[in-house]
Amino acid sequence: MSHVKTSRKGKSVKPSPMPDLSKSFSPQLLAKAISAKRTGLKLSLEDVVKVLSISKPTLVKIEKGDTNVKLATLLLVMEYLGLSFSLISDETADHKGNGDDHDEWY
Image (tube, rainbow, N blue to C red; front, side, top):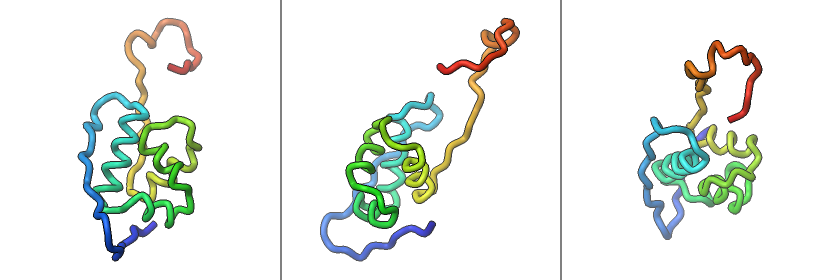
């Protein structure tokens, strides 16, 4: 997806700092990263919702870390902004070799 270049007049987008992405994952960390990426690209909320055809309240929820947003919508926003997930196993020595071979949610 290509990024929007805006020529609108008015309020400029103030970049927010990218959070430390080496910290443990949380919805709030992801929200801060999405907001930082959007503002770093100088895209307003309106710029993004217009291109992706999503509602402004949905994008605000994503940027606040609300977990009641569809994963497909979250991934759409991330893809547009140039962000992606990496899946990493959290297995530790405590989980290995204890005879419990089924996966669990944590």
